[in-house]
Structure formats: C-alpha cells, structure tokens
Image 1 (spheres, rainbow, N blue to C red):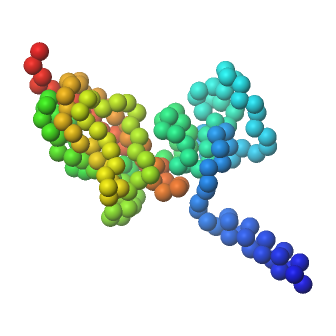
Image 2 (image 1 turned 90 degrees about the horizontal axis):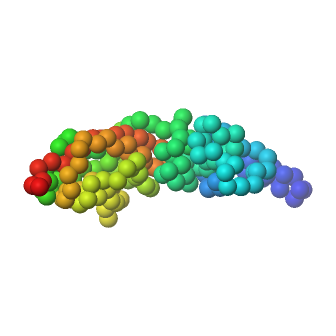
Image 3 (image 1 turned 120 degrees about the vertical axis):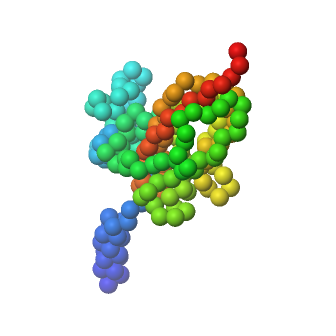
Length: 184
C-alpha cells in the first residue's frame, strides 16, 4: 500500500515540476545559446576548445536558467531567443549631458511588468562603461537608476541595457548619450 502512495507521489511531483516556471542554476555548459538543454555528459573544458561565440559553438556554453548567466554570456548571445526588447529608461535619457552638471536620474523599466515590478530587477548590465561620474546602481527600493555628475567628455555613444528580471525574464533596450562642454 505504501509503495502505491510513494509511486503516486513521485508521478505527481514529476508532473508538477513541469508546470512550475522556475529553475536553479544548472551550471555553465548546461544549455546551448538557443536555450536547448544539453543532454549527456559535458565535454572537458580544455582552454582553446570552446569558441567564444555561443551561436557557432557545438559545445553548450550557457546556463539554461536565464538569471544564472553572466552579463558577458548574455551579451555574447546566450539565450538570445528569450530576450524581450521592452526595456527603457524613464524619464528618457537626453542625448547630451553637460560636463560637471548633475543629471536628472532615470529609472530602468520594463513594460512587461506592471507598476513596481517593472523596476525591480535581479541585475542590470551595460555593454560598455559609462563616463566617469555617472553610475547605474540599485537603490534601497530595488530600482536601478542612472544618476551622477559626468566628469569626462564623451562623444555620442550607444549603450545596450540587459535586464535579468525574475528567474525566467531577460529584457533588453538601449540608450544614447554624450557629455559635452568641458574646457580644455
């Protein structure tokens, strides 16, 4: 009798686990760039054998759990089919900031999430460094805010913003900015 209950419990747990949209970190190399879970043993990680471009790699180089990938992995293409292009900064970033003048802070947002959920993310990544004096940092209320006072000039530069939201959410957007007006 106990064997039947145990068997039924195992069947139920397997069914429920397929319905829950959650994941733990499976580990580097558990997934191909397109999100397909790799099956079978993982090949040895010998330097020089794994190409840096995950789209052209026959080896799984991504983690199947989106939030478990590093910013570098995600910017290089890991799980690209799952990225929603719905991220922006509010208020929008003006294309030109004045040197040594405080900027109006802008909050990273996603239209996929209503209200405060659209501003609370696990991590926000930029594809390049901001000019000195500007930061993109998480506040005590879990919002990610671009703020500061630029102290170096910068020609018009485009930034890609990648957001790790809930366990299964990846969002992306972009903004452009320049810093002008410094005396030589």
